Length: 441
Image 1 (cartoon, rainbow, N blue to C red):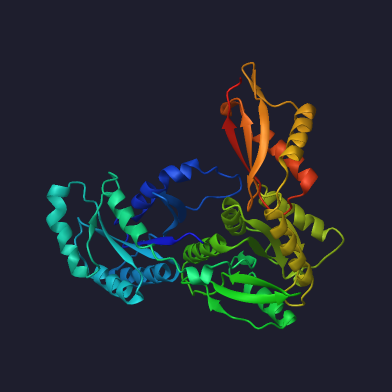
Image 2: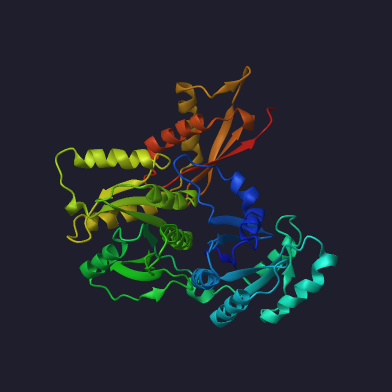
């Protein structure tokens, strides 16, 4: 059900980023850049044939000496092994086989994960093929020659990658319609404490299942007869020497957890306030159209007067201005304050994500909205919206039939969205709009 994750592993300067951009480039430029989300190019969505997967660049760490290369590579390969369904191991035909490649190949072999060995910088197949064969020595099967720069051999490589997806574990995934909640946020914001508190409070039989090859722990919580699966992204706490690396790991973990959830709960540390990193993490859920709750934890540690909550809310709304729909709750994992309300909120958001609106009612709202505020025009030509209908849920997605796409403006889309939200709420869930052109009769 969730998209497979493909991780790119390799020494610095073998062309990981070039390959990453070659695969993700066109896709990333299409995705609308949301104001307030600083796009981190660690991950991207890629589609090939009928497959869609998440591509993760496990890092281009620049080491100073040979010893560090190997330890950094090991760390990188470990992350890939923990989070990925398929590993793309990238080597460089110009540098040839080096010792570090053997060490990583050894680790990858032991991981029993499917590995696709890719030899980069093969700009001329006739000239470099003899050098490509050298990489058979790694014992990872057939090396695939590519040139990330020239986009040569990429198709063959992707064919190999999707071939490795073939056996989805369907028994586990089958008809598991329990709500899945990803608890996301920076390290030490209190993600695990909240889950532990929920468990303690509800006194449940817990089955900590290591989230299918991911490094996220799935925990089942039962409340009022309803089971919830909480995905905790704090499964692994890494003593990292470098702050950016820690950020990278937390983002990789978040992407894989959010991919599988219905609702994401972003935990913010009240003592620190909302940070750039929080906005980055929230953006991952927003881009994937997931339900969203912002939970401000450690609220008991904040000195309060009668405006504290209002000021805090304003700061969060300002920083996360691209997701005004997100629900907000102030709680404390330590004292248990407002934790029961969190469940009510989760239930409401899940319901909103799956809410369907009748076409007739939608068109009434649209007609009224257009009467109150005319659609935009350009060079004397006005946007005409003929019809609107809802085509899917999770997130609720609407198609609008119009005369010309280039006359649309995001501010008018936002206006229509607000009219729909005023009537139906849709709190906690993003709403997507698709425009279809239809020529006037």
